[in-house]
Length: 423
Ligand code: ATP
Ligand code: MG
Image (cartoon, rainbow, N blue to C red):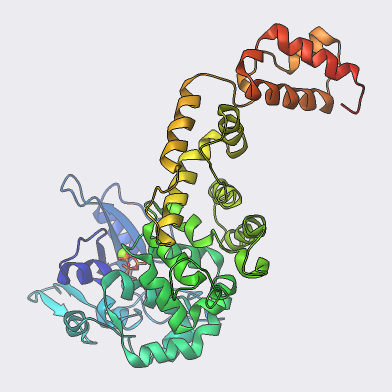
């Protein structure tokens, strides 16, 4: 039932199987040794064994819920029938079930014409669309995501209801919106869903900073604006992380626009991206990577860069980020109507690679001395001065790797220390 049956009927790969039953969770648990029940929503995880299907979610029929503040139900009630269970589902294509009742023949339960809608390519709310969206505003975002992912057209009344109720998505938790955004970025061309978000009025409520990109002029592709550029860049990006970075990479442009330029937009944009991701409760490590990518995305390579300049670039970006930064630049280029690797990007990659494999110092760990050496050899007290000296030594080693010997670095360190506490 639900998404698995929908995908099966639409000839799409089924990625998880959902089963519904009148049995209560405890009954399901005792029927299947090793099954797990760890929630209050009636869903038991049953391992189907070595048949390649894996874990199957078996959920007790549900009935009406208490809906409050336009979010998910606060309470789940177990129900008696599959029909009542299907009535609380969001869209007709998701409200189809197949199964057997005791003593009966197998039958398809499709009270809302989900199979016809699937065949004609229509995404339609179950029942009265505005009512269903007021029960749970996430359904509007799901509508956009499902329509894009399943290549369905949102039925006119359902679409009109999204337009009217769009404001309600303000009440949703960041986590739930984040989950839908993640799924949008997993679709083959995320721009399809992102345009639908815009056209339906959801984008302006969810992410006004992105909606503000519409109409901002860009002299990249004739007739296209900043939002078009963002959408093209997202589609061109290859991994979910780069797609998210591409979505946010020019967030700072509307606020910094002056005389047709966007000076410092990567700095403003990095701040806005951090806030954007914090609102979604994005995991911090991943958030930080995205923010750093946006902060660094404006690098401009020219072939006259010395090897020392290449090393400074590596040190500034951080070697853990380089590959993603190049992928983001490729997507940005394609989004600007250019080939992925014009003007020297391939050359920069080769030169970066050469420096990385040369074993030269690119961060403090690569230096021939460490803080403990400075304390011991120079008789300095532990403290921030040590860190400042190490930074200067790193600059020196990056400028000329031949200086990265214990003897030379200690000599440089002595002369810095001799300049006094302001060094
Ligand atoms: P996917 O194919 O990405 O898993 P899905 O439609 O199966 O999409 P799930 O989040 O796995 O989405 O939800 C499983 C089923 O639960 C849906 O098919 C739908 O019937 C129902 N459902 C999920 N979220 C809601 C909601 N907010 N309101 C009503 N029904 C929902
Ligand atoms: Mg599913």
